[in-house]
Length: 266
Image 1 (cartoon, rainbow, N blue to C red):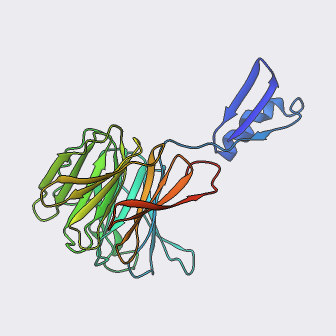
Image 2 (image 1 turned 45 degrees about the vertical axis):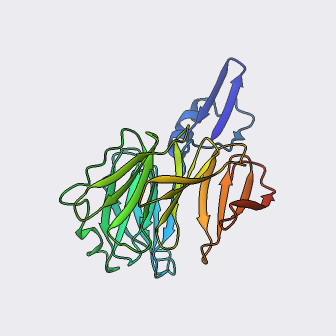
Image 3 (image 1 turned 30 degrees about the vertical axis):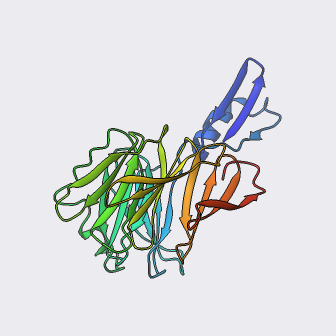
């Protein structure tokens, strides 16, 4: 973000577009003595995920596209278009066959990534029978089940969690009880549990079979942004707007370490 001022009465902020910035500054080039570059934060977060093989990287953007990259060469293999809003979250199925993308258009789209050749990537595109999402607001997190490759979980600003079957497009849905939008979801290693984090600062543990909330973790002072599970499934990490990362022992449900040092949101 660029901010400039000719006088107190004439101040303006410009977006991150080089040509637009040059055009806006041109009439004032002799009068401007300096520019200020501002660091700004969007109220949404974009995603970046590796394929299970490590041989493919997917990124989502506010240009409404998903890009697939060769991490070795840095070459963009394919640009996947179709979303009508910002692409917020990405998830690969555990077998590496599908990539799911979700965003501000309220849709979840599925892309075939069975082979890495660019000709094969958009073969599936959006499903022939679109998943009948019931969210009434932005879809933020989407995550594939770690064992069942035809199951995934989604959540959004409508405060509902949906567990979808890709076979018939049906969902088990329940109210999350969160007081603000759900930002992140992560499954346990066997998929029997699901953890949700939200802008209310609370993390909830769900039994995916009964849809019952088993526990709450509520030591964060501000909104939770991301959750991550350790490879042995024993530790849950949470990052939040309170500038901390907390580590939770899932056996006891206790926070055993707080990582501090960030000067802004994590």
